[in-house]
Amino acid sequence: MQWITQYRGDSIAAVDNRNFRLSVLTRTGQFVRSFMLPRIPGASATNVTGTMRDGTLVLRTSVRTTPGESSHRPVIVYTVDAQGQISNQLGDFPDAALARNGTDVALGGRAVVAAGDSVIWYGHSDRFEIRAMDREGSLLRLVRMERAAHRVTEADIERARAADEQLRQRLFGPVAVAGPAMEPEFVDTHPVHGNRILVGEASDLWVARYNFMLPVQVLLSPHDVSEEWDIFDPGGRWQTTIVLPSGFQLTQVGKTFLLGVHTDELGVHRIRMYRIARE
Image (cartoon, rainbow, N blue to C red; front, side, top):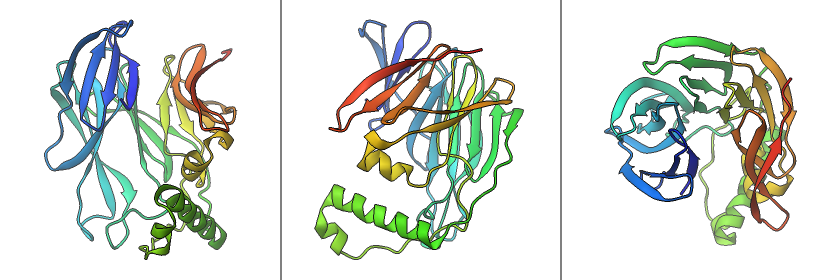
């Protein structure tokens, strides 16, 4: 299972994104039912990004493209009802910028999607403008923040290349590193926020801060990673920025707690909860 969350009432939804199946369980773990996640024809693998109060699932999937066909890889956001049927397709939105060879441009921004009780959120990390939509895709409000996009320097590119080589060696061994690699294209400016957003149980919006080395650090040394998040109230007003403890990856924001996975120096994963005080 790749994703577990509270479902309608006190049920639990366990999503296997690899096999495109959702299983519903009781709060004690007893199996109730399961169904295949419906896919959009012509699109690639789908991922569940959140659930709504009535059990509606919010999913995203990428549209296959050919080199030169589009400047961005399109992402489709759609909803699935509690019976496993597609209820609405909110539309196509920009995702990763594409290089001339059809691959994603290195260090480029990404689409971010999340769901709350009755709101679906979409944004793109190249621009700090996150839109709240209803189930039909109608705009409810925008969350904006002024944040300058820093230029990608030669030093940034060298750090990214070195980290990528280290990661490939860790995953595939020295033979893979010694072989020819496709030279990536790099963007001119960094994204202005990270590639994750979360919606809390109090309907607050959490937007990850950008760190271009973070994805590699999470894979190579997750115990050293400290995530930073900007927090916005339900009306879209910025409240504060929070720095999480090293090694802790946030997965759920409650009204009085933060839940996530902590990784120690030995690579051991543990579920960890922190209490939070709200004014």
